[in-house]
Each structure stands twice: as C-alpha cells, then as structure tokens.
Image (tube, rainbow, N blue to C red):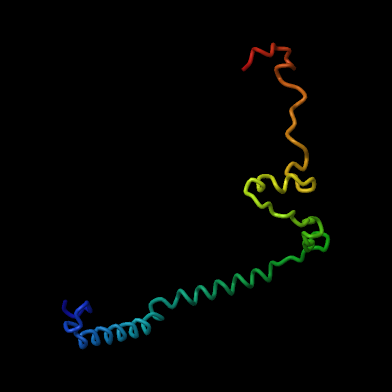
Length: 132
C-alpha cells in the first residue's frame, strides 16, 4: 500500500497526501475563477427569463369578479359529528363488530344490499331453468 491509507499507518505517506490535498484546492480555486467566463451566461439568462415571466404574470393578471370567487371552506365539524366510542371489549372475539352492534354506529347506513324487482329472463318470459 503506497500513499493510500490502509490498515498499516507506517506505510502512509503524509507528504504525498498533503501535496494531493494542496493540488486539489488549487485546481478548485482555478475552476471557480474560470466558471463565470465559461458558464456565467446560464445564470444571467435564467435571471432575465424569470424577470420577464414575472412581468408577464403581473401584466396579464385578471381580477376575478366577486360572484366567481371561491368561498373559504367551512369547518368539517359543522357537518360531521363524531360520537364517543363505546367501551373497548376485553376479548378479541368481542372486537368483531363491536362498533357496528350499537345502533348509531352500524356500517350499513342505507340498509343492506337490495335485489332488483325484475330480471331480464322474467321480462322476456323465458323459462327460469334455461339459464344457470
């Protein structure tokens, strides 16, 4: 292992590591100086485009009439009332449907599933056993 860290500190070359670090700093400083000449146009064009867009936004803005403005939302507590839960059952078997057993907390708010009053087979006066 020459010059690269490792598990044996006696083989580590501190002078070479310092020289590499110094060169890295010098190269970064030179690149920072040259960056504006090579890539600075990207920053100036971006700033110009953003300024032009902001001018267009303020220039083209229309005022919304009062009758078309969105009203602020009313609090949900005005429409939905949450009642306190009943006592928690002591057994896991009691958890099955424990809230829906209470009349105000049932799951089927609009009744159970309904069957249609007519079927296509009966409407066409076909025999019931003609279909599976």
